Every structure is written in C-alpha cells, then in structure tokens.
Image (cartoon, rainbow, N blue to C red; front, side, top):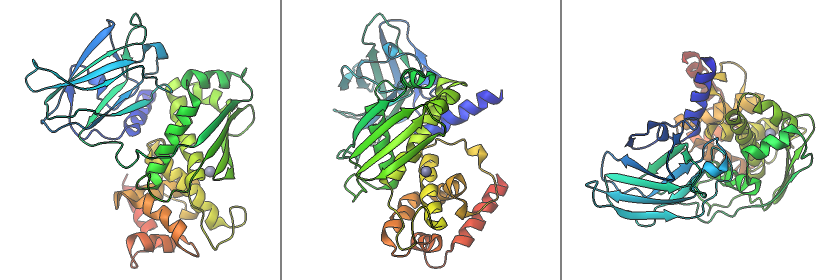
Length: 372
Ligand SMILES: [Zn+2]
C-alpha cells in the first residue's frame, strides 16, 4: 500500500496540473500518473478527448510509457470537432521518437480552432506493435511560449563502464541521452529564467559520463563548459524498485546538477569552498529547482534546521516561497546576479520588500510545516 501511494504521489507531482478538465473514455491518459497507460489493441487507435468549453487548444503533450520504444506512438493526427461528426485536422506529426521512457513530446498545434472534442489518432512505427501511451495533456496555452529560441548545449555523452548493470539499465530508461540532457537543460532554464531571451548564464558544452564509482552525481567546471558524472552504482540501486523510480531519481539528479551549470554565483562573499553562505545558496537553489520540477518526495519535508543548511532544507524553503509569488525562485536567483555582496536576508528583501527578513520568512515557513 505504501508503495502505491508513493508512486501515485510522485506521478502527480511530476506533471504540471491540467488547467482544463478533459474527459475521455481512458482516464489513465489524463490522471497525471505516468505509470498508468492507455494500451491499444489495434494498429490504429482513436482516442476522443472532451473539453468543457470550446476554447481553442494551442498545444499538447504526449508522454511515452515505461514499455519499450516500439510501443510508443510514432505517427499521429489530432483533429477537432464540435458535433462529433465533422472532424478537422489541426495537427499532424510523423516519425516521432521519444528520447526516454516517461518522456513528453510537446507540440504546438499547427492549425488551432475552437472545438469541444478532440480526436487523437496514433500508430506505432511498426503497426504490428501494440500502442502504449502514458498521458495526453491538452492546453489552451502555448506551453512553448518564450522558449522557442532556447540555445541547447552541445552534449558529449559517454558511458565509461558500459558492462555495468547500472549502465545497461540507464539505456533501458534513456534511448537518446543527448536529447534527454538537452530537454532537461531547457527545463532548468525555464525554472531559473523567464524566457529564452533573458541573459542566461549560458552553458555551451556538457560532457556527461556514466561511471562505476561511489557517490551519486557531481558537476565540475564552469559555464560555458561543464562536466557531469552520474554513478552507475547509484543507478543500479535506484532501479531496484522500478524503472519509474529510476526515472524519477535520474531526472531529479539531472535537474540539480544542470542547475549548477545555469545558475549565477553569489558575489563578494568568497567561494564555494570557503564560505558557507555561498555554498548554501548554490546547493539550496539547485534543490529548489529540483523540487519545483516535482522531483522530490515532498513528504520528506519536515520542520527544523536552518536556511543555511543547504540542499533540501534550503531548497524546500526556497520552493515554498513560490506559494507567495509564483516567480519567487526566478527573482531569488536573479538577486544572486544583481547583489554586490550577497546574503540570504538581502535576497529576501529584494524579492519581498524591505519589511521582510530571512528570519521572518523562515519562521513563517516553519509554522507552515508544523501545520502539514
Ligand atoms: Zn550540488
């Protein structure tokens, strides 16, 4: 029972909330849970989605399942209708490939219109294979807005110990590591910045290695060129529970390490090795981004500690600030660039006004945690 709750929780927090209540005969496609699937029986499937209004849908996301890639949708058409009889093609995609399991493909609708019903028709690449889809998310927003011009880094991926169990199961999860890392690079930038046109602390090259050694993951170097290592031993351990658990962990760790590439570093207070405020700021923001992405088990959030403790203790606090201002993480991060001599208190004042303070905000957060 505990395990089921655990997985459901993860899955719910993983996806952004559906803004409209879309109804279908296949609730597993719209339940915000990537571990429940629509499983087709024929080569060609028709999935009807009912919208509560005829507001035009501008974009959608399709999620791959935890099954093997031949079961993924490869070619699809999206149609719209108001009477269920006359259907108009509003989007079409061919030869799509998901870079990993439980992965989204985001499509901006080519020919949007005001419809109450949508029909998603998809086929697998080899039409003999059964079609499996984890989730469909329709949105009346353009979910790519502001990020069309994101400059992806160049990725050099290498598995240094390809015969380890960890390396093998990684490739079961991730079919195209370059695309998987690029996707997460953009997602990290979306949490730290407003649009791709902001002056982003630009990462141009990422060397990413899977290595058979102790530890979890670490980032070296500084933008424009960074190196990230991910332990095959840690991968093997994380995969013991399920492939979904491995995915959750792998994405979470990647969000954290990529944040180190894209984040600004505090000025005027020493460095990562010799100043605790510097360290707590860097590691706190990295875990705040991971939490904002929905990739922590938030039930581990407990009262106690201090904002200077770094990692989750600081990260969960910074993420909680988004309940006061949805842009709190972005604004907090920009204080790191803008303040000459950075401190937590100055950063809180810069975001929430001169009457606020780090103590006051932390105490309020502690009260919130106690009520949880
Ligand atoms: Zn870190």
